[in-house]
Length: 248
Image (tube, rainbow, N blue to C red; front, side, top):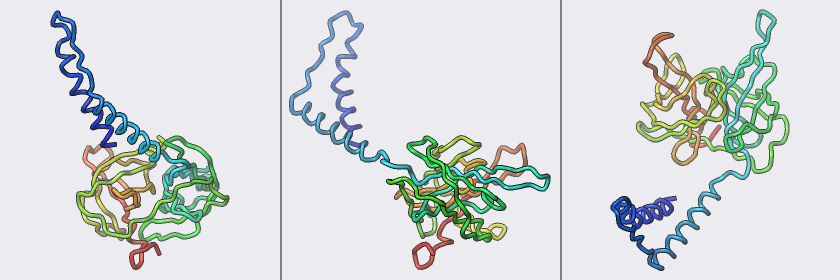
């Protein structure tokens, strides 16, 4: 990708003299590109295209949309929409509050940012202390399905992060930011401040570090009031499920 930008930069420099002459009354004198430079540009662009092609997923990503249907006291059924991440072996991690009390859970796969196949899932393990749930997909997932690896370490203040989720029902949205503080216990839960944008529907979605590992899950937005401008976004760091540097 850097080579592609470099190639474009060289082209813009070569074109600059010609552009500067336009409108001056004389015919523009377009410079020719030396053969050696032209050949290098071609090689760089070809390599950049290979890198871009290799970066495009061949199967669904590890990011999933979760819909959980839970019966209410009034006899109606409420559907909670949240997010999750596939970690392999038919298992999805999400926030417990997304699926708590649900009688039916459905996940939707992400193919290049577009909602794709849907599968039923069931809760197989929960950890209420840190608001975590482990789901099992009831049927085989498509070939080439990506899986994500938890980062079994403490978040570092200032490190870059990428969040994927389904805020306010908008499917598979990516936002970027940084870790905003150290992990701390709040209301009995281990939480870490982040400055990336999240909203209702992001809950349970992955927070990736620069290496593509899952540093945590989107958890909640703290606001001082319904109409307040200020807020603090929080994630649950996944080191809470790790033991001896690996997922327990």
